[in-house]
Image 1 (cartoon, one colour):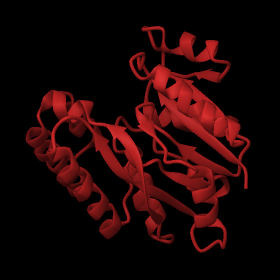
Image 2 (image 1 turned 120 degrees about the vertical axis):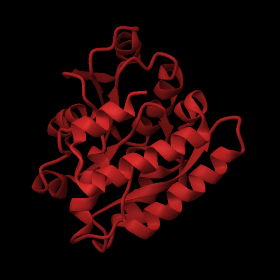
Image 3 (image 1 turned 180 degrees about the vertical axis):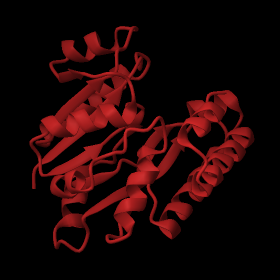
Image 4 (image 1 turned 90 degrees about the vertical axis):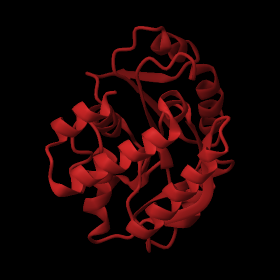
Length: 225
C-alpha cells in the first residue's frame, strides 16, 4: 500500500512546529505529504514550505481543501489529518494491517482530546462510543479511505461544515469502517475556549438539526459563536 497524508490548513501557526515534526516522521515512513493551505495570513504556509513540504493553495473551506489534496495525491490510501491532530506511532502500519484483507474500505482512529480539563477525557470517550455505534467518523479521528472509493463517492461534499459526517453517512450504507482502538491526539482548544459543556450541547444541537434536514448554511451560522 502507498499512503498520502492530506492536511488542510488555515492560520495554524501555533501548531506548525509540532505539525512539521510529526509529518517529517510520517514522510520518513514512506508517506506522501500534501498540505493544502486555504489562504493563511499568519505565516503558516511559509513555515511549512521552509520545512520542504509540498503546499498546495486553495480557496478556503476544509472540504474543498481536502478534495484538492486528494486530486494531487498518488497514494492508494488517503489519510485526512487535521493540523492540530497527531497520529499514533506506526500509524501507517496500523492502517495497512486494518485494510489488508479488503474487509474494510475505510476507517478512523479513536481519539484523545488534549487539554487541562479532566472532562475532555469524558468527551473523548463519548466521541469514540458514538462513532463505534453509529459508524460515523469525524475529521478529528483521522479518516482514512481507499483512493478509488473516495472518488467513486464524489469526495467530501463541499459544504461549510459536517463534510466528514456526510461522507461517513454515504460510506456506511455499504461499508462499515475499521474502528481502530489506537488513538490520535487532537487539540481541545475549542472546547476549553468556549466551555466544555456549552460546546457539547452545541455540537449535539447542530447534529440534531443536521439529521432533521436543517440547511447546512443555517447550521454553519449557529456554529460560529
